[in-house]
Length: 273
Ligand SMILES: [Mg+2]
Image 1 (tube, rainbow, N blue to C red):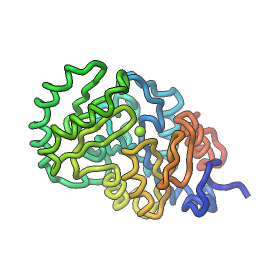
Image 2: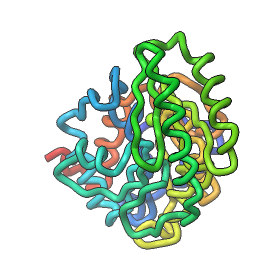
Image 3: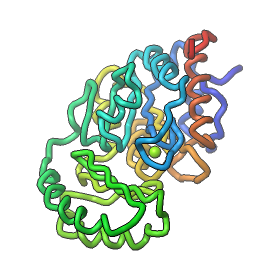
Image 4: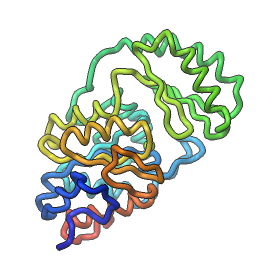
């Protein structure tokens, strides 16, 4: 018998085995997708603004969203405006800025706003210190700040030390998250797990089995929350991760996997049409 999900390298005992036993019609009613964007759906680029969205991707996401009755969310460190710039044709359900900015059926995970004042205190300090370093890109997203160092990876250790030092007085409200060539300063109260937990309490996500797909450390809270809701997790890239039930080697492989999933959910109708 063909398995419900497209082929995937799975850990033994993964909850995905349960999903695999479902018929396509049942899978449509039982599955919810939580998708990171950068490094998961699209390839990383030198700067966050220079990424390319492959032509087929929006169509695949729209097809999946339709076939899952809307149970598809993008969960990202990017701002909501930036997500809409990448996907101008469709307003997806989004947990942006690690849940600091939400669009969709769920409310903001928490309304604790102490981080706003903490970020305001931190900005002048960052603007004083960072310009003296070459190859850094400061991206102020309003509710979080990313410092990208892809142009100068050798600064990672020293940069982290400095960021930890200047953030020390604000550590009750803010935390430093380490991604791929990026440090993100974000509210301690929000993470991608909050996005999953918030959406899983409301239709059309409620009662479904979540699959969270992500590629780096910033996704682990979302992966853990997906597991806690009886779901499973897929890690993209070459890193093994104990929180992952399955692995896909690259964003291109993720896109192909999602496209195949859309086709299966539609009993063989081409998803990208
Ligand atoms: Mg990512």
